[in-house]
Image 1: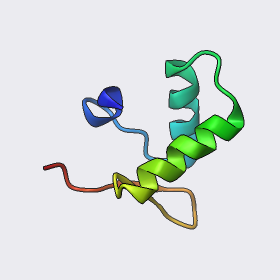
Image 2: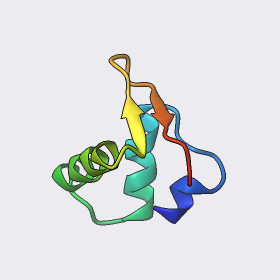
Image 3: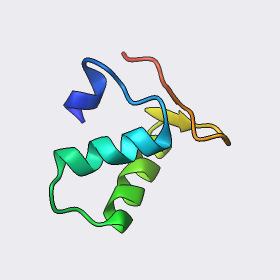
Length: 59
């Protein structure tokens, strides 16, 4: 999570998925979906209909 907050942030759902896979070598697609849903639930990210990601403001 810390790596996503600092530095370059993925701007598309596809890139975010690839980034998560890179961070956690042995992770299932279901676990990636769960992580993305949790990021949305916590309002850390918003995923638009076209797959573009925007990030919430940081405290």
